[in-house]
Amino acid sequence: MLPTYAAVDWGTTSFRAWAIDGNGNVLNETRARDGLTTAAERGFETVLEQHLSELGLGPDAPAVLCGMVGSRAGWVEAAYLETPLELGDLGARAIKVPGIARPVFILPGLAQRAAWEPDVMRGEETQLLGVVAEGYRTGLVCMPGTHSKWVSLSDGVIEAFSTFMTGELFQLLRSQSILKQAVDGEGAVAATPAFLDGVRRAFEAPALATNFLFSIRAGWLLHGAAPTDQAARLSGLLLGLELAGAAERHGDLHGAALLASGPIADLYVAAFEAIGMGAFRRLDADSCVRHGLAQAAISLFSKES
Amino acid sequence: MLPTYAAVDWGTTSFRAWAIDGNGNVLNETRARDGLTTAAERGFETVLEQHLSELGLGPDAPAVLCGMVGSRAGWVEAAYLETPLELGDLGARAIKVPGIARPVFILPGLAQRAAWEPDVMRGEETQLLGVVAEGYRTGLVCMPGTHSKWVSLSDGVIEAFSTFMTGELFQLLRSQSILKQAVDGEGAVAATPAFLDGVRRAFEAPALATNFLFSIRAGWLLHGAAPTDQAARLSGLLLGLELAGAAERHGDLHGAALLASGPIADLYVAAFEAIGMGAFRRLDADSCVRHGLAQAAISLFSKES
Image 1: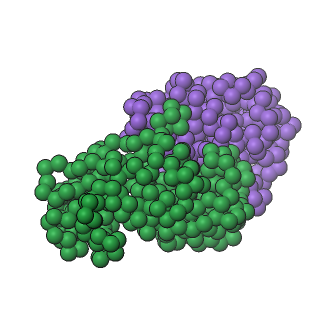
Image 2: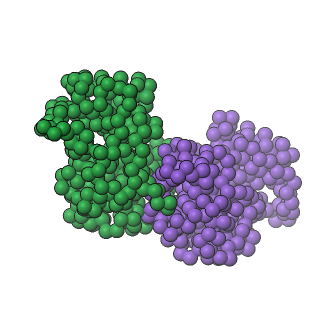
């Protein structure tokens, strides 16, 4: 029997929590910008207790946490597990936060230690546990973001994964580089023709990536290309480069699952179509992390009735 | 007959000038950090007159200028010429600065307007005029920098060129990205094994560029890789990506000329050797820009005796 508990996804810049009852019903939900930086100032326990109280959870309700909260810069370090990882084992490998009254567990991250392709994730492994719980146990998963992940799953096991700095490079180039004047610095990018052209070009000739980037400035200087188009082109170029890299590392991308929510999901769908990737499947990132936390909670909090 | 004149290379962050007599002898030289930003505040004429006076040049000595001083953000805009460009024509296409007593001419930059590979240079075309004057009239020229240029020369004509954002990306990633902690943020990079490994990996698998970048962080987190090694790896990865792009755009790199001075020249030589580029030729960037300005001065200032 499972008690009512808190499921928490706690990252560098955001905090999301759900109150879930013993039958798996979501009772309540909260989102805040209380990421690691804020929490490190105000105290992790203080921030957590405030949100759990808002969710109507009593002081005995256990909590399961994932994300950067388990990093060295977080609350309590939950050391990296290693590839290959049987996702069903994730809950049992959680770390209990010491010295506090409430039972709070933090899920570990995942490392790929191979000397020539070292890589890390923290939070995505819990989403992947949710993906497996939703029945997608074998195949490639694309998880877009500041640091996009591509993950090879085989029968519920993470075999290998690779991170691409797509989102961070987009923000850096958009706001800090010589391209700044040439691109629109605000707002979401849309899947315009300039975006799709960027995707195709970088996917077909990834070696020319940094030349294509400079052509954003040149196109603005010489042809007066519109900054909104050039921002879309920048996004498309970086996304096409990521797709070329994913294909190089993981093989055929056909049939991959896309784990994303909101506008970024639409951009990736458009990019997949632009390079002729067929039969991909969409999964919702929000529901996957909640399902993953719920799976871990079952391992951690179930008591024989 | 050529009078004594000033040859000036005036960029965004630097000012270099030489006093040269009618026989081509360098009489005097100055370097300052009076780039465009400083000059826009103090006045271009004021800055120029101060330096020419320090060089011992009288008020009648003409001056020939190249670099960003001729851009829209510079003193007087010298509109871009277009590829293909016969370099011998460069001097005759200079713009005279109006409204001042001294005869001052600014050399134009060069644009490649092709819709799918727009590109620009300003200053490098004058160095290339020097390259041609030194007898290298046909072949590929590599000009490393914040925005590295690769140029295809054919019998003294610039046929095509491509810019790679190598140096700027290195600075951005080193100082502003999540890699910041993992790399040493100061000083020049050396051609260490980590640098050479980075060059080879990115050259062989350019699609994985942004994955290799993230592995710099992962290697630091997981294996405690030394920040000086990781800075060298970062530099090597970006340089290897540039070499892959240059090969994609310009074909075989064998026999290219390297136009660079100082530590960056040594890094490129090591990178060329790492990918098995044979028989390349080194040219000195400083002497090429001076020779290019001197060639332009002959077109501009020679009088029949």
